[in-house]
Length: 477
Image 1 (cartoon, rainbow, N blue to C red):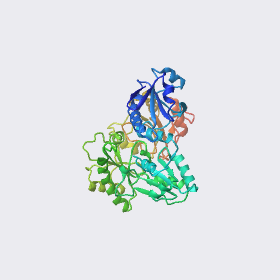
Image 2 (image 1 turned 180 degrees about the vertical axis):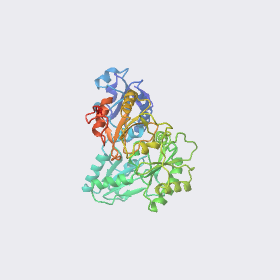
Image 3 (image 1 turned 90 degrees about the horizontal axis):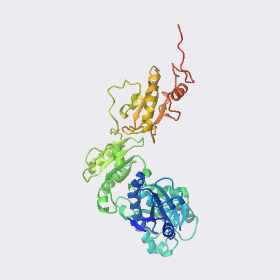
Image 4 (image 1 turned 90 degrees about the vertical axis):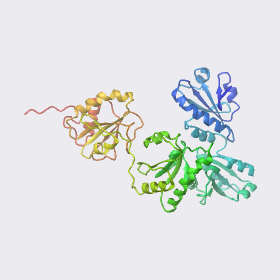
């Protein structure tokens, strides 16, 4: 066995003997040439270092399937990377969690040990609370309805949060809680702007306790990472800078405290807005969605999304006054949304109309015509194959007054709601009378397939084609 960072390298000759001692271990089956494996490698190694220090420790290992073929064949590995969880030397389940460090850590923590850790002493409690993440502890005098519901909450949320419980008198006395569920902020996130400890005050309700945790765990200004990014509700204002709670807690909180001071003032004034901080390198892809591709200087870059998912960028340099003004104007809908868009083409006379974000409303949401629109990517092979057929379709329908055939480069332009593009090409049919409810086109990709579909679904039909898609014969005079 050799070590690459803190990831254990396993071979055919020692796989079983090295996996056997671990109560739980995550094993990656990979190939050195695999692009997805190369992308995963630094995240996997970072997770391994963090999980090595977990209580209890969780090991991460890897197997090179180009060299250790017997083991990979034994476990049915057919693609890379494949990740599997083993318990006490036996295959337990396929790993279906996140592929970035923080997500891997949270997922594997939930697989190690019970969903709620038993605290048998004050020392246990102090050790549990001395953690980078939030702690949720149940303090109980005896086994009762609240303790049973707490265990169920832990069972359902342990992949997201850390739970512990105690019945020990000395622990109850030390923390002065009895039959209570308490949420503790980690020391790194504690500030004078909000309580570091929150006690649940409701009944023994699974639903209510879960809502209490999810509604308060992010606090006034949460640390947003890949694994919890979707938990932040909109409207959301985010400050991006060099957030690093491992190497620079003081520097990370310097800017966060300024965000929180403004945030508390505005929320105390009745403003319903949410705040977060992010590492600008970790979320560089997200910044690029706001047109920010080069972050210079050490001051935060600030963006916002409203409940309609519109995007906004703070153009002024960060200061508390500028930040307050930006958030206030954002919430008052006084700002111009940011729109990633190519320029509107000067000549759009081709049969297939070119749509960009700036002219999307004009062409696609035109109430006078039905629209068939293709969302494509310039590098997509399937899109290139479709292009001549799509052009032929548009030319055949060029004289149809009630329909527009259009296309949009979804990599260079924002795709508005409710259109969803997860692969290329994606096509939608948008009837003129129901622009808010476009229909995903899942039919064939031949010209005749499109014509049959449009002849059937066009609001006013097609002049040159019957409802079965056949060309109408010209009537002789």
